[in-house]
Image 1 (cartoon, rainbow, N blue to C red):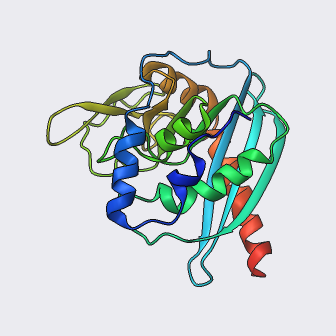
Image 2 (image 1 turned 90 degrees about the horizontal axis):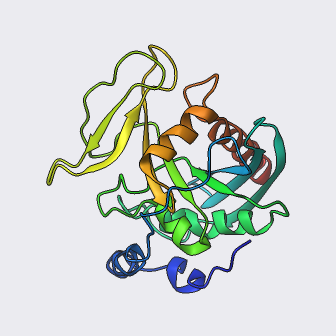
Length: 234
């Protein structure tokens, strides 16, 4: 794993105002001028989290795949406590500590990290994928199930069709609505760190060969849910 030089100050429990200040400082470190790895090469890792809000328990999963074959190389989980309140736009502060703990348990190189959520497609341009990328130095992207606060035109019906995901205030393109399966609702892809939007979409299509969601997300989601049930005895 890469060093995580900002780990303690960046995810320690904070009030919302301080958390926004941390976002502002870390956002300046996001790298947006790299293309990222070639789809189908190296490793790709899915990360996801599951909560038990009644017990304040959060479980994170990281699943490393061979990018060429999409076979599983390694899977790990980590369990933590939810130590930051639910505040829209600041969800990363609830998830980052446990996600980092899971990534640090990997023995395989994670390669590209795919988050179930947002990168630049975030009101403050700093969603979980960007936050995680800056802290780890890894290339990251976000693939979300809904467009959050942004607007888009429906992409064409064919696999691979896409349309810009736009900020309603300044019209900036913050991601893309991407059709991963014919006639199925699009997913919403955004850059996290050290990857281009075109390449992020190409990776997403490669990873979503059979389903709407990338295989990385499907596997990480299933693993963290199973781990949460085991951790809470449900």
